[in-house]
Image (cartoon, rainbow over all chains, first blue to last red; front, top):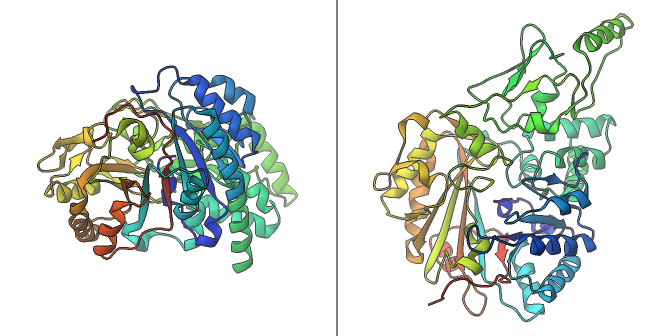
Length: 210
Length: 269
């Protein structure tokens, strides 16, 4: 989930894509952190995230990952992330996290202005923030913009360009619905930061264009 | 990754799932891995469910179906016969997996993933302080991958500006000499899905860093994604924004925010 900040898209499509995650500082506050991580997960689950997971146990859209099992398996220092589609829900999650006073780092990837507004609504100022300065280098090797928008939904880049193309083709042929195709792609993203709902919309758009 | 030719039925599912497009159909009708291009991310092995069919059964079924001019198409997220076989990797090839497989714990950092906590734990650690900027250059991202020989060109170029390469970052651990930015020689021909060069510089050095990246980007055969962070001022504004704009670059509307709920374990100036 390292580089969720490099998600690409228009501000309009980014409006429906927020990733919230808790991070422990190894050797600083990671020891004894299991109950805090579990509480973070419980709070997120209360608001029905469209995806959730971590790099060690996988994401909830994978066939063999059960939410309760994920919760039970969490250990010290193992962060977690959840994806939400709208700002109102994100605000509720933040409110609950403030009340829970876990004392662990909470980060949000998404439109910076919107996240800042969420913080201000509860009388807080953000602590630190990171911008993307985009892609540099041999850009002629990259595929079209729409493929990149889907690929960057996974922070580790595990959804291949070829798979995205294949999914577009399958949706076009009626072999899969856009929703099923988005779920298939989401399985590749171990950490669970891939937004299947945004991917579904992007697939539908690509099918129409082609 | 390796493919057991005895088991492979050449369905091609692993070809599309491969992050580097390194798997192809061999002349014998069974899949092969281009070991030069494979970054050992294990996505194919993890994502494609092993249906555990006997290879002779699938091949036989195909023959019967083809007799009736019908085809056999496996579901897209399965390996019908479990032919994918992750090998035991030796140094320096093991670096490919360390950097590319998100499930692998990096032996250098003890963390999963390719980088460090960066600003994600800044409210607790104070890693990026007042007057400082965190800069990350993720080589190979998105989706192209990077050889360490390309990565070295960037570390050499940046080392001239004497940044503080993040000591806990896995790329920093591979830099042989921080003054020159040179990497260990035996790793230069290894390819990874991506690797993050992470450093801290005074805010006023941002324009020079970006100018250096502007030049070196023309010398490499891959892409990289750049991120810049800083500790917010009391009014919530970001001091790095002004320096980036002054240097003539556009900031993304989206990014990562540490909202500051972590309990500080450091003394702020």
